[in-house]
Length: 106
Image (cartoon, rainbow, N blue to C red; front, side):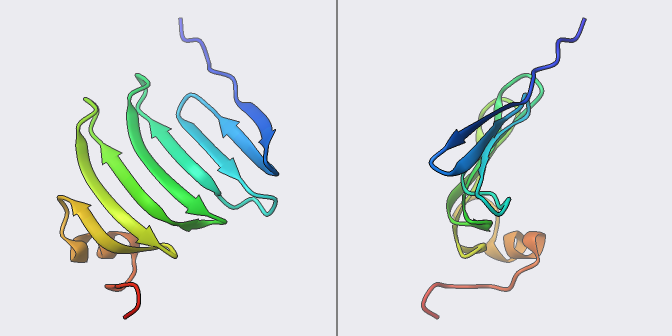
């Protein structure tokens, strides 16, 4: 028997906090991701954590395998990777998200 995890929504600092079995995130008044975003594997193990500033990725994001091991991590600014912190080459990472190579202040 499968028991569905109900969607939980609350208001936190003017943002909607939405939590499901697979995700835990916040949305601002315009519906953009804002704050910490987490995605989970079916067994509840953390798959990914990222941070958003009104719809733009900002700060460190990390991806984990199904055993909880860190696979990739990046530093983001204005929805662009500014530094690869772990594993994947920057060119591959930027190709994956469809942006050009970017350094802050360049």
